[in-house]
Amino acid sequence: MAKYTLGIDIGTTSIKVVLLEVSSKKIDSSHSLPTASDIVGGNVFQAHEQDPGEIIMVLNRCVARFPREKLRNVGTVGVSGQMHGVLFWKAKTGCDWSGGHSFTARDASPLVTWQDGRCGSGFLSSLPEPESHLGLATGFGCATALWYTRHRPKFLTDFTVAGTIQDYVVSMLCGLEECVMSDQNAASWGYFSTATNRWNAEILEGAGFPLHLLPRCVASGSLAGHTLSEWHGVPARTPVGAALGDFQCSVYSCMTARTDAVLNISTSAQLTYAMPGDFQPPDAPQPSSPISYFPYFDGSYLAVAASLNGGNALATFVGTISAWMKELGVDIGGDATLYEKLIGCALNQETSDLKVSPTVLGERHAPLGLGRVTDISASNLSLGHVTRALCRGVLENLASMMPAAALQEAGVRRIVGSGSALARNEVLRQEARRAFPQPVEFGRDVDAALGAALFFCDRF
Image (tube, rainbow, N blue to C red; front, side, top):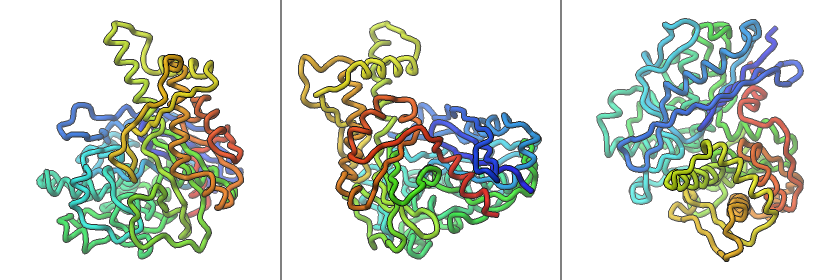
């Protein structure tokens, strides 16, 4: 009998892999590595692309860190990853297994991530309205593909399949000649109806979308295939689930009661709670609403305030300070060191009357919004004041999208905090407790890799 489930999360900045002991549902061991895969200097304005070759290399390194004798007892593989993004590949030659018990990326495009900004408001307004309760935004897979059809049509002729980065991993592990995509990832692309579990094929075809690139959609929790070969000790013919959304898996790992809400702050930020089992979302997109309804599991939905401004807003601030210091000829040892020093300054500054709106990346419901700093005085311009106000602003922005009254009306009694930014930033944790009337709890091992492993450990 299998002893372990392997859970994988392909994140925006890092990869995490966990080995879950099946009988106890406890993590045996885990490894995480940064991907450092961003492509710098691209020729598309506001593009955000990553190198899938680098991502796969880091994934192999993570898995190879586990003892082979344990990997030989893996009975199921569950994969999650960053939603909305898209890459394209050739079905029969999308990777190379010739190097042994691992694969390398081949014949694949760059990954266009959810942070991509090429589809501006003018371009999006030229696209047809989806038949879905979920709207469209830049960084969504279908929008990106339609951008290519208009601006670089020959680019798409080199490929036969499209999917998210996590779908690509599953396809390569199983040697699939198609992309099998869960409804969670399909909904994140746009032009997908969760009511019918189908693509808006006629609308897409009318807009010039190459329909042969659309993945085959299955319900979340479905079997995608079996491993094509031994993989660092994971046996050949091991069942692999269709890839899931990292957000849903993060929630699954820590939402122990329907009265819980989950606050996640990593690169971006989300606040969510479970809707009643009989809930059905609106028939059409509500682009001005800050609340979206994401498909979860077994036909249910999550109410989600999904902010584009989370840990990345803090990273932008740190990068700006670092750039200023370099201009002044000062070197303090890199952004990580500077980040820790700024958090230390903010911990020494318990409150601040400075107000920072951190929406430097806009929001999907307000894409033209900008960041703001107000209530500036001569006494609140220290680094402690500014860093404290920025951390508070990240939480206040989320709370404005999903107010306390909405949480109380939904019966939320507790907020569970998760995500890499919250884990490393005590100031964010302090401000989270101040932002909501419900108790906010931290310290649990909550992440998408764990959620993927937990969901699939008894599935096949």
